[in-house]
Image 1 (tube, rainbow, N blue to C red):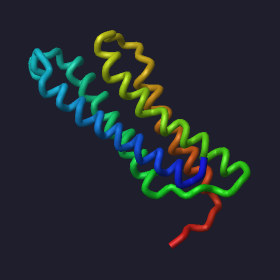
Image 2: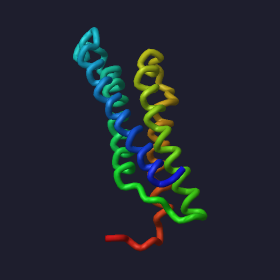
Image 3: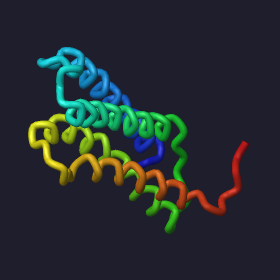
Length: 136
């Protein structure tokens, strides 16, 4: 995938995640019973998944706006793996928002995976740029 297409993909997925953040906010506002009446743990649980969507979307939007491809070799592969993780994270976090509250358990799987994917993808993009001169 070319740099232009990958940057555009990050931008589209990021904007879709931010749209999902807005939709999940409407859902929380219209939730019955109202959120203030819910158990505090469940309320924080719902709000945190809501904010994770915004976080993941914002990272993808920023990367989509400024994406430049690394040269061939290990930098290229590291960057592509990082992009794959960053593009996967909004999907994991979106599913976590809808799935995890209905299966309220302390041992969760999707939201930590989405957060680790966001961190890992960001870190891999950082690694792919180590040693390169900073551009103006």
